[in-house]
Length: 246
Image (cartoon, rainbow, N blue to C red):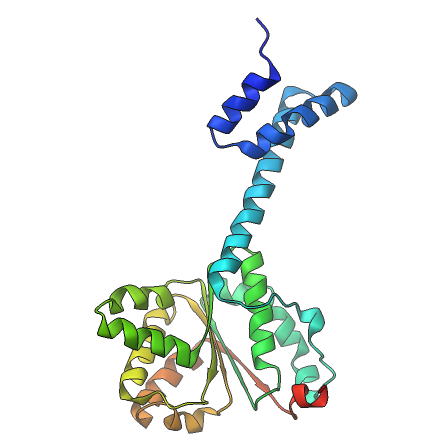
């Protein structure tokens, strides 16, 4: 007894293979035209299912990441300042995401408008496209979230949110002091991620001035020591790119 396409299609949907079901008729028509074998048919259907699942997974990564815009390195002007040109090879290598596999950190240092956030977003976008778990946040927003969690006794769960992503991007460190509580919470995040997960940090302050952000030079040194260990440091100079293009 022959089996109808409708029956097979319904079985595929029952098994939550809806993309294979949608492509079934078309692939069978290709098989008739090109004399494809059973394995070829099955491979084409599986490829279609896997491709759609990958696209959906990447879409979820973006929606959960906190990235407000998807950007690519093609939008970054390497000619704006010599520091960008000098470090172009190093920056492009970061987009390969090997540093995430090696559990390394990246620190962007520079004045406002020099490209720190743009580069962090480029790398975060690439990581999402690679189906990696990414979280993009500003330093002060992360601390505010953690302080609120400490008040409602959900701190452990909230800490895990920042400690577990394959890549945590902590943007704009240095614009506001974090105080004693904030400094301790920041240390907990960095300490747990150290050598276990990769972190990208952007800051307008050189390491020597981190005491202005954290509660004490001791805490600042402890945090810097963990971030600098096995990390890539990119120092960006020049005037604000945003002002130039107003």
